[in-house]
Every structure is written in C-alpha cells, then in structure tokens.
Image (cartoon, rainbow, N blue to C red; front, side, top):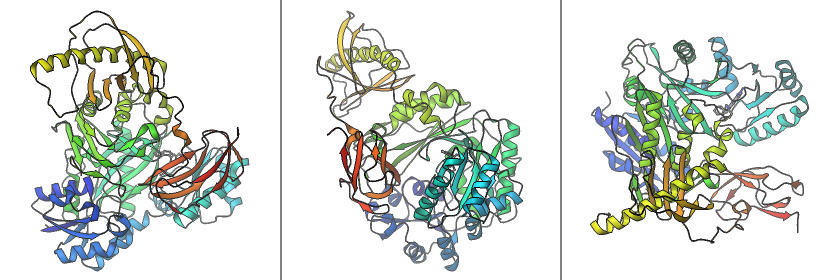
Length: 637
Ligand code: MV4
C-alpha cells in the first residue's frame, strides 16, 4: 500500500479522504491556498504545501503546482476528490508522466465520457438503454429538425460538451425549433467552445437515479446500489437518498447490471457513477457517467457498510475489489442534506462571513457529519459555500427521515444565513414523506416549502403564541434558577408549561407576516421545538420551520421594501447571459440577466414593467459585487 498520498482538494472532501488514509496508516499531504492557510484539512493532514493565492484558478486548479507539491513531499499517489481537477484528463496525464498514481480512472475513461454524443455511441454498443434521440455527426439544422419531427415533440436540445443544464433547450413545437437551436448553440459555443448538439425526446419530470459502480484492474466490477438525487434546484443537488424510494429489487438489478455494462465498456477503474433518468413508467435511460467519487457517496456508504475511499485506495494500489457482488448487501435507508451558507429567501444568494456559531448535532451510528469547517472559520467568496453534509441512517425511510428532520432542528449556526429551514421544510413536506420525488419537485411544491399558503400561517400562529408564553414562563424560571448559559443565543423552549393560564392577546411575526393571536398558555406538542436566535425564534413543526418573533402592535413591516428591484451584482462574478434585447418591453419579474458567482447562477429580474436601456456588461465579463449591471426604464415614469 502507499505510504503517503497527496490530497488535491480542500474542505470536507479533503478531510473525508484524510480520515480514511489515517485509518489505513497512510500519511497525508494537504495542499492549500492563501485563504485556506488555517483550514481544517490543513490541520488534519500530516504535512501541507502552499500552492498559491486564494482563487482556485491560481491554486487548486494549477496542475503544475499540485504535481510539484506531490513530488517535493514524496507522495506516491494523488487523490483529486471531486470538482477541481478530478475529471481533468490533462491532470491525469501529468500524474502518469511524473510516475504519480492518479486515484481515479485511466485517462481514456475520462476522455470517453467527455462528449455526450461519443458516450451515447459507446453505450448503444454496450446495450445500455438510451433516451431516444439523435447523436450523429451531421449537424445540419435541417437534419436535427427532421430528427425532432420524427421522434415527436417535446424534444430537448443538449450540448454534446454540456453539463449542469448549460446549452440545454426544451422545444415544444416545430415552430420554435430553429430559434431554440440557434440559442442553444450560441450558449454551448460560449460555455464550451463547442456547438455540437444532440436532440433527445424530452422526458417530463423524470427522476435522477444513479448507480455507484466500482471496477478494479483485474476485470472485476460491482455496483453498490443506487442513489436518488431528484431533489435538485437549478442543477444543484439538495437532498440525496439511498435506496431510491419505490424501486423494486428487479429494477435495481437491471439498472445495476446496465451500469456495470457502461463502466466495463470504457475499461473503467475505481469509483464511478452512472446517471440515469427514470421516467414515470419505470423505464430508465443512460444520462452520463461521472468518473470520480461523488459528493453524495456517504449515503451509499451508510446502506452498504463500505468505506468507498478505502476501496479507491485499494483499487489504485492494484488490489482486487474488497467484495464480490454477492457479498454486498443493502441495509436500511440513508439521506444526505447539503447544508449551505446561502439565503433561500433571496434567490439562494451565497452568504459569506464568519461562522460565529457552528454546533452540529451529535454524531452516532445514525447521524454523520462531513464538514471542512469549524466554529470561527470564514465562509469566503472563493469557494463553494457548503458548510457540511448531514447524513443520517435508519432501518427504513420513515425513520431515517425523522432522523433527518431531528438533526436539522439540532443544527446551530450563526454568522451566516443557511438553507437549514429550507431543507427542513423540504424534508417535512407531505410529498417528500410519500417518496414522491422527481426533478420538478421543488418548483412544484414551492408554496408549501416557502410557507406561502394561508393555511400555513393559520397553523403556525397559535403555536408561535404558545411558544412565546412558554418562553416567558421559562425565562422567569431561568432567572430564578440562573440556569441560562449566559452567552448562548440558543435556548430550547420545547414542552414548557406557562405559569399564567389566562388567554392573552399577542402580536407575532411569522416570516414576513404580522398576525395577532389570542393565546391560551398550554403545553407545546412534543414534536414542536422552538430555538431562539438573535431576532426571534425558529419553530420546528411537523409542517416545516417558521421563523417567529413577538412584535409590537400596529408596527407592520415596511411594505415598500422591494428586494426584487436590485439591478446590481450581488457579489463578484461573471455575467453569463443577457436574456432580453435592449429597448424591448419586459414585464415585472422577467429575468433580464444571468450571472455566475461562487459556482452558482443568479438571476436579475425586472423590478417593474419597462425596458432595459443599456447593459453595462457582456457575457463572459467579470463584475465586481455591487456594480450596476444595467440601466432600466420603468414603464410608469
Ligand atoms: C433530460 C431531461 C429530460 N429529458 N434529458 C439536466 C442536466 C443534464 N445533465 C441532463 N438533464 C436533463 N436531461 C431528457 N431527454 C431532464 C433533465 C433535467 C434534470 C436531470 C437530472 C436532474 C435534474 C434535472 C433538472 C432539470 C432537467
């Protein structure tokens, strides 16, 4: 086995890899940028090498710097983690050229999956089911259009070099085809410098089900069951689970075998993921193969009892797979929720700053936290703002889901805004409990998830009032007993009994709404937990989490504040697309411009009916946070 490996990554995945290396007695070398000088992955590793300034394009993505760090530290192998250089064929070649073992697949396997059309040709030969469509070399628009007419609308145009939804356009009628094709090609040309397009039958609301595969250098291949990653928002995964709800053993086996055929067809080695679209008839179709360890691998570890990083190290070292297919068993159910520093109430804008409080739920055989930050660390603008992956396991889906909502309500984070309330609302929604997931889930259930229904307010108001009365009683008791932790902003006020039982009139804010409630001080139901913060308290109920505060009567919230009217860049980033023509009439709320910052897309919407009179930036241009992006003329002035 290797005696020393270098981890060419940062954050939680670097920490995750170091943990297994330690267990196996392998020394670890971390690499770090300026911003990561004091990061957790650096302190956990045996050695660390500085590789450049904070932007990843000047550090974690600089192949030469990483190769030099490996050579100078005497590491024999490099684990690339996910993202960064993990699927970069040049990096893989540079490792080979320097006699460093790349802990991942051979370069040919990475290249084979680089183009969607080439991948589809390989998969067709290997008898892996494909979405009906055209993936030929002849890019004559008339040929592409004819293939669309033959398969019937709706169709989806996809960039052969694409990923993450870029260069993708749905076409519902023949009349829209030529324009959609031109737009998709422009976007593909701009994003990937390659305008080759595929035409596919457009599957409505499919599920994203992916199979974890593993292959060694001795022609052994197994699958470790599936993960359902249907819960996504703008192509970012939000909650993943294993196994996929409602999948029969027979379908699991067929998908597993197809995934192994896919991996074998490209002489795969190491950990890989074969992604499928699963339609409502239970038919599945190859989408793409990811030639790396994935973010969501922990759910597979929880249900299989295997350490996938250990498997990767053994396979890279030339050992046979630790298990045969027959020895692998699927046990229980696992979820992963990605905890992000972002603001769901403001278009999921990343939230940067210091993590002044970071207390994760207690870890146990049921609860696992993979994180790369500790209390006091900074969430910076330079990297993905993921704080942690919360992973839970139990014997069945219902119990695992309860573990998930419990753990989410135990998380205490202050200093940055997080998506924890959003995750809690998703996880406690009835549709999710039913296992009714597909890629349109979040849009479809937006009102429920964001509590935009009157019934949610009616439900939460009396509970909030009870919590306030209970907290008053408890603070009286705490004062008497001096039992409050003096500097903690977090107090639990669950199932406390108020001392005064007479009905009381209270003014309460629930989210953005003001209500007046007459409250009877009774006991809060056992499933409801209230956790106070700087501005009020969060009420964790079976119908989601509600942020509440006691307010003064007749002091309504300022209705004039319009958060959608912001035409400035939310942070440093790049303009991706301009979606309207200068001078063209637009309606309030129409998306005008898309920009990308911290690996996420942000849309800028029209603050009112009107027109854009000028765009100050063109696609591809860098913008400083706060800069004016465009000039807007309102229709009513
Ligand atoms: C599709 C599809 C429906 N029909 N292909 C989105 C990203 C890219 N890798 C593939 N994607 C899709 N391809 C056909 N023929 C729907 C999607 C899709 C999607 C897929 C997986 C997870 C989330 C998604 C969200 C929107 C669209």
